[in-house]
Amino acid sequence: MTALQTGTSWGAAGTAGIAMMGIGQGLGVPAPVTAGAILSGVYFGDKLSPLSDSVILASSMSEVEIVDHIKGMLPISLTAYVLTAIAFTVYGFQFGGSADMAQVQEVMNLMDENFSISIMAFVPVIIVLLLLAKKFPSYPVIMLGAGLGMVWAILFQDRTPIEAMNALWAPLTVDSGNAFLDNILNRGGMVNMLGSVAVIIFGLGFGGLLDKVGILETIARSFENRITNEGNLTAYTVATAFLANVFGSAMYVSLILTPKIMSGNYDRMGVDRRMLSRSSEFGGTLTSGMVPWSDNGIFMAGLLGVSTFAYVPYMWMSFISIGLVIGFAYLGKFRPADGKYIKKVEDHAVNGQFATA
Image (cartoon, helix red, strand yellow):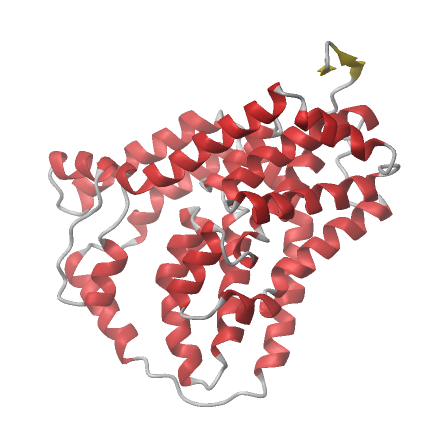
């Protein structure tokens, strides 16, 4: 839920995830199992949140509206989530113990002291979700959400206009006296996103370079004889996204390159691009934490204190989701019926480029 509301798997893992690691330790659950469950939850919420950078990137690179992209992922994601929850529940019965809730209670008390926590705090998020559900343009709605957050900080959190505006740029400054809580709260703002923005710019530049010299077209054409149906197409897309994580070392690179490499094959076969964005998201986002040298792998391992190879076997949500998206593609299930994002290929190659209408 934290990742779904905030749109960040890193933030969710750094807040609720750390708390769950402590609770899991108290209950006698091995750390890799707890870490796998945490990553299953944060990546599930992240890829279904309209505020998520991965969702925005995968949909925009596939030329699909954010809401349509999320709707395309929803049936498979919910099925995988239920199966994962059942699996972890059954597996967890073998462990027992008592969790120390003292730190959790201390954090809750400090949150009450430093912030005004009420149902009103959810209003900006609810407004954003409702507007997106009504298919209003995504970027203006997200900007509206940021503006509402600033107004809400002034009205309900006793922040001055200068402090509220500064929070858009620089990390929030809170001194609660609790190191754990301060580490969670003293972050945010565009400053903390500059590293991600740099990676995205690099990924776009790298993708443009590969496209200009014809490498992307060569890779795409090499798949043509092997891709004969939607199942093969989905499997190759997921594999491409995973390999982009391996060699690009960043989820953003994967979500940029995969649609650029595979879009021509979707258009050639007359397959709706919502399947492209969905497969790119499943293969790129859900496998990003599996690569030890990737941005997600390094961050999650360091944050949770569990090595990547130790928690990967327990990332059941990722494995189940990928299995389902490929399996359902072979069966022809959960494919868009309206053909809204089918791009007809008028000329398969014009001047060395794919041409679509």
